[in-house]
Image (cartoon, rainbow, N blue to C red; front, side):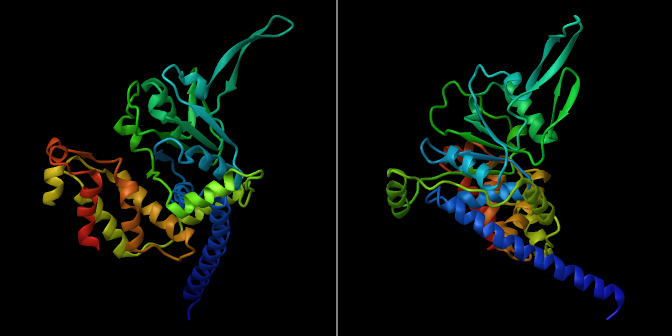
Length: 335
């Protein structure tokens, strides 16, 4: 074996050991969160995939499904500085990003001082984000996309890591401001939070209505999460997975040759969807301690990656066709 081949082999072995070690740590993270959040294993996994991929997530579900508690638990288990903002129509951009105040010293000298807002944290929960005004949503968009905010012409970098987990109530849409497509595209995943099954709800009732409740405890820290995010980008991806991602995303565009797309999709996912699916597939493999993602990861993540990056035509809505049905049809050739 040549020196180059030996170096490549050693590098591959080191990467495998790192993935296996992190997979064991992430299993402990899953277990710890599962002691607090009941019956939402898939939601927990998708939230962790979002953080491992370095992205943001939009959690959609009716009230009372532990969306807020999930974000709080993630902050504790991952030892992140987390904050919560309750979005309302009168919430101003300065209420999120901060503002400058004029101060006067004892000798009469005046100067402006920047007071950071709640966005200066590592894990921000934007509760009912669609109730915030478009102006406030745009301010949050800059923070999500650039990792910094601009106040009075000055840029202020946000802490790293920085993640936004926003919630949205699918009910009571009166008085809301639907998120624009540009902002929806910034969310790596749209996580639909459903009801727990019977057994999980039974365990939740017993565990949460007694004298003492299970409390979350740190398992990882911010530095380890950043290292995990770097490791995600080193996970190798096979040609079959790359082709599956490209085939799926491109078939979801109205100008594709797929008949279903032509008939039911008004506009489809752009290249950012391909990037999101690639990163999420790598993160899912890492979460399971696997050395590389497979086409099964693409199939499992297609719905949360694509459903907020596509729009149905009027004909599809008139025919009673939902987004889930359209995505399932696009997945058929990959199964």
